[in-house]
Length: 424
Image (cartoon, rainbow, N blue to C red; front, top):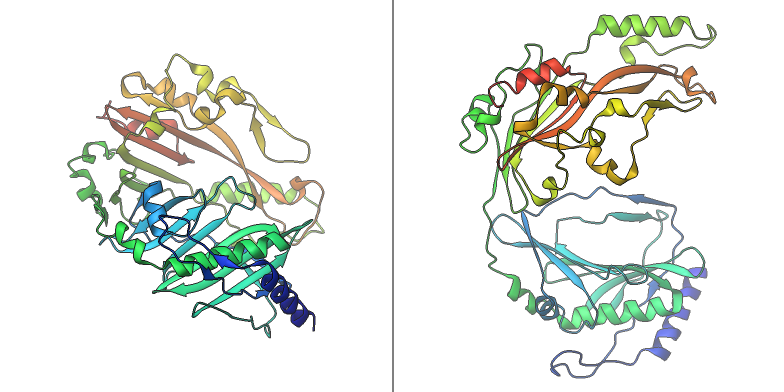
């Protein structure tokens, strides 16, 4: 009954307030009645955020002329980006009003490519009412939110593309706004996409290499380390990729954990705990995987913003900022001045200034809280988590226009320095 009443109210509101879709660009569109949009108003049983899956190989930011051609009847201050597959086929277009109330978003993508980053879950027996807008089935939702705001979603398919319109607004204004936008999108059609076809395809490459092939790479091979410690083993294969945003060679090594040392740490910690509390068995605890990530790429302007001089130790030397431990917390924190904290955590050095002393200054001891007590509760995390100390490194070294970036856990400064042998 509640659902039927909501539908009837929406119909009455729209019938009384929406009249016609008039021309907005170039005077080419004749006045045409707006199709009435029925809003479903179910109560969500849950909400979830979905991690995006990248389907495009390259993208293009639309000019105002281009997006007005793609959306001929939308009179909105939009920004837009189109994403393509490797062969230049359009896979998705995303348009948005970043500073509008509710941050209006319009997305459409090829059928079969899902891109719903935020989903509602409704009752199993819920069946939405479908509106007919100029012959196109449209599903619209109005989900009650905080204060006077509601979340609006409009979904339909047009010419092999799935469309979704998202924003927040007051109930009355939002219904009128969604109805107008959906009508304008459908009446505008897809003819304007022709202006985005046959794009200039940038150089694209994505392939796995053996370590030997990586060392033979004409651009980055000389920056692949040769003196890799014997107990390091490659995690998968080095990966070489080129797209419009980066030109990079990535590789990662993992380091076997010292299980004897971990077991001694485990038994010592257990001996200090309440004997009535049952710990997790040693073999069931995830201790983390010591690793070393090494990437070689062409430097970018964004990278250069993190350059520091070896003389400016206050901008990269961890030892200048003592560790602070908060009550009832195993973790410890360095208080880095805010004005250069972003640079401090991943600084870049010129190769001619990079020395073993500089490398040692990047050595940071981090405490990893390892859960040993299962199902226990304590206001003091030290009763549940074992403090595992491991050294970490994060830095980059610039050789001309080639940047080597390193991120390491449980690797010594001496081991890292040996991997730079022959490069400096």
